[in-house]
Image (cartoon, rainbow, N blue to C red; front, side, top):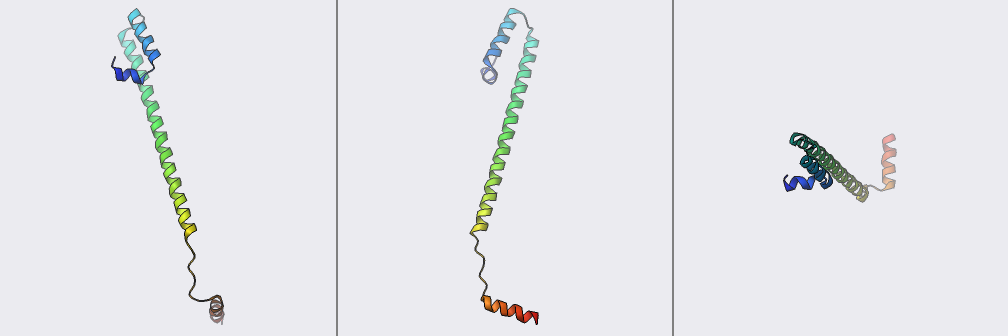
Length: 97
């Protein structure tokens, strides 16, 4: 069995499979089938974890963008009108007439 495959699968289970294979309790085809199923489960687990990590990273980036946008809004100062309050009030009164 390749060493890289052994590193992905639980060592206790691999040694148990080897013992059963040597004792004749399993055929080589049955052993291969069990190993395929284990590898498939491990692959699915890794894929699920990586998708969770991607979602977490995207959520963190989105949260960071939202916070920076809010900060920019808070940093904005309202533009001061060129007319004073009295002048604006006069302009409003003159429009009403």
